Image 1 (cartoon, one colour):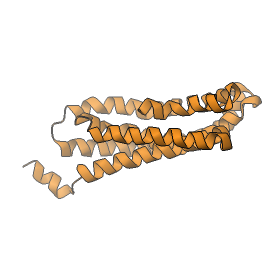
Image 2 (cartoon, one colour; image 1 turned 90 degrees about the vertical axis):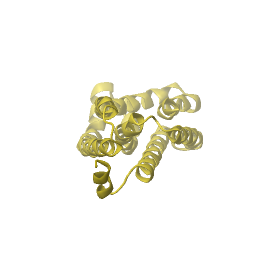
Image 3 (tube, helix red, strand yellow; image 1 turned 30 degrees about the vertical axis):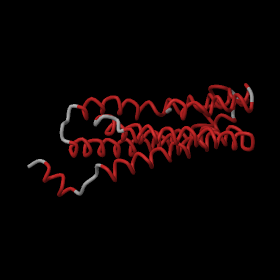
Image 4 (spheres, helix red, strand yellow; image 1 turned 180 degrees about the horizontal axis):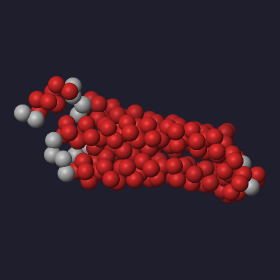
Length: 195
């Protein structure tokens, strides 16, 4: 389901708009993938560290610190990427591919929220991947496809990027809500759990 959320937009662009627009969009998506290497690497390192911690409060504390750190690192990276997008596309692919830069700019908010979610969800993975996360991804998948089918014919690849950003942000909001309402407790309760 997460793969569907991440890749359905490209398939729908191909189906609705054809190969040329898919080429532009795939460049924007590839640029997004490169930026996402940082949070993916952090998540890969974080998961085994969280898995070896038995205390849930300590897991959550470490995951929260890693998530905040990731968000802080991503912001300047995304700002720099956004400022350099048009120049980089023109330099690497030529002016004919400039639509990819605009699509990438609309992906930036989604790259941020997906990057943060990639790290935060490691907390849920480390406690056994609660079934509710499956429902989050199912909802995100259906929403992503439905919005793309409506938006892509009207807004093209920029619309596909905007839909991805909205979908990734919704997914992060649900993951935060799950963690917040199920596992977060005030610091005083965390302290009591070590006694």
